[in-house]
Image (cartoon, rainbow, N blue to C red; front, side, top):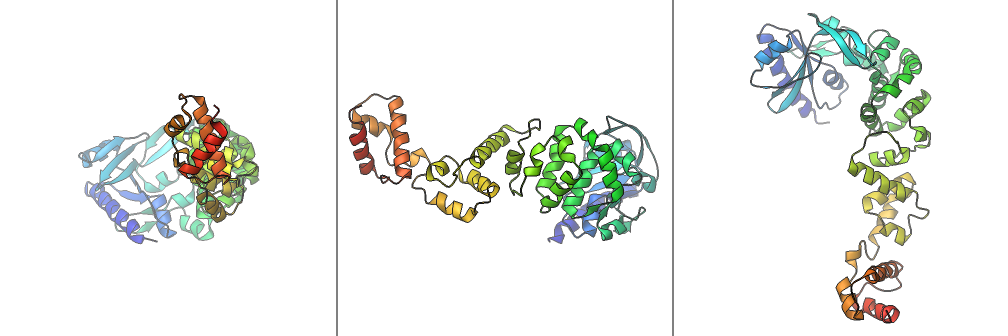
Length: 373
């Protein structure tokens, strides 16, 4: 683990805290960074919470703030790092089991922490580096368990994304869900149907790319979330390392994918469905990446598949030792569909090793089989 990265990030965050506290406010690092530091995990970003209002933050960082987000958050850039700074608040009501539509600013850290999702995300750090733990989050880290802050059913009803976040944290951190959280998920899982596919995909991909993905899939199935996530093929999913391979297997109809992702998934799915992927002609149809993913899905020996692919005499049409113009001159014919037919035939013969991929050999074959054309 490269702890220098965490330390550099923390040092920059401490400077932000000091700048806020020097202006007469209180401020703390909160959530994931503190949690991951305690768990000796590399962190990638830092959130800051404060009693300073957004207008105060804009004044303190007048030359550094970038965007004003929703719900009292300001994004500040300091030495190339972006910090999301959020004012202490209490959420009064939510809309569509997802978005807080009414909240009030408050003045105490402890009250602010009560609105958060899981206890493990409530650890704080002050400008001296001291850990602050009002809700006994460190005990949950020691016990490797996920509890909500407050009553679990209410927390999940407030924001249905927390259902998937609970699974994600349990997967990524290799923790277990408390029985209360499991029951709450079972009672509220229907809410996933109204959650945007974009947000569902985002959380699922964090689960699918975790080294503990098998535990994540087990939890999703154990809690019957495959139906509400509209992923009926989740039960058939064996461990595949590649994300596009996983989505190709799941074949979700409504989830959003880029054009590039769709093309990759289509190729992977086609390769996976090949009856004999190891055949030379079949291998030739795909690139090595697609073959590797499909081989993983089929539980083939990937090293052997790489060898088979590398031993192909050609990997694309341009590898043939003859060009279309040469064929036209050799047969004294006009350019037309016949050229493509001949090149396709040559690819097959070379891949079957019926002829060698040498210019003279290819010309002899063409004259023998196509001179009358």
